[in-house]
Amino acid sequence: MATPQPAIFNEMGRNQWYVHLSRVEGADLGKIKGVLRDAVNAASGHDINLCVLFGPTLLADLGGPVVDDFQPYQTFVSADGSGREAKGTQEELLLWWNGTEKDMIWELQFNVRTALEGHMRVARETPTFVWRDSWDFTGFVDGTGNPEAHRQPEVALIPDGKPGAGGSFAIAQRWIHDLTAFNALPVDQQEAVFGRKKAPATEKTATIPGTSHLAHVELREDGNNGYEGSAKRDEIARRSTPYAFHDGSVGLYFMAFCNRQAPLRERMNAMYNTDGKGVRDQLTDFSNPASGSFYFAPSMQDLNSMLR
Ligand code: HEM
Image (cartoon, rainbow, N blue to C red; front, side, top):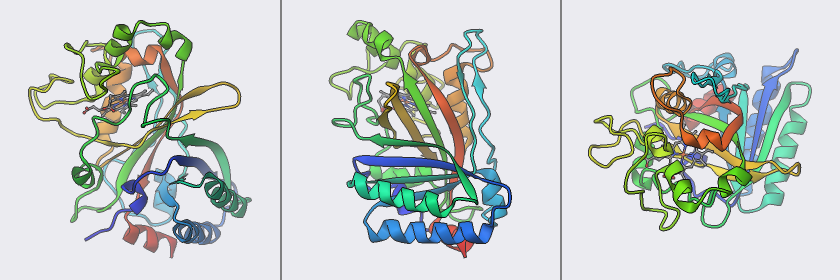
């Protein structure tokens, strides 16, 4: 049976660091493999979770599994003329560290990016943290609708017998919140944006407005998205955390895993109403991503053979 990268399901520490990289001209694959092997060992030696995720090009060039329907991230543009979009910034490699000790996480990522110099360039990075009891900066708890822990492997991992078994498709985006605008809304209107109560966070609003976040992302078999009537379909496992930059920008670093990429794309297309047949998620009036990429986190067996 294929073993997933443990960082996908381990208890997430309160500190995270996301580093996206792509190859530069003259990059030596042998060197990159060696650095990544060392990175995996160093993280486990310090009790820090490290997830190694590949974009389509590097996955192929390192002889990774040929998984179904692995597409690079394309900008999702709203068809309603609002100009709202979720910008595509696909890179080749994402390294995601998380754990308790921020100083050690910094050290590990610094050593890796330094060792990769001349072979891979850091395109962007985001240190993030758990705020209070997993709150988003909007004051809403993020993650309550996640599948229960025992169901997450089924939701997030390619099943045994298929190419890439034990691996997982991921989306990583840095959303920038307009908290001034959001906080100016009365609480009942804030709740309508999500379709979820601020407190208690486990409760939904009495009706789920068609513009609400849940109506776009809580996919149901009967198409009545956001409502309890039928079973959920195509679930995903979310691991998002907030970030705050020194320039004042704040928001959510959205990270989610799925056993296929299509459910991630479906939700993005719905949120942005890219085909013009629905309505845009009202959340995108208050937050939009500055970056977005799709990755694949191979199983431990595939990762080890890719890095040999
Ligand atoms: C600014 C960005 C976002 C914020 C602040 C946000 C916030 C939230 C909140 C507060 C909830 C309700 C509580 C919960 O279940 O966690 C929720 C649910 C959810 N969100 Fe988001 N979200 C964001 C982006 C996204 C994106 C980009 C996706 C998918 C591509 C997504 C997928 C989901 C799913 C699947 C649920 C759970 C639905 C269910 O109960 O089945 N979210 N989100």
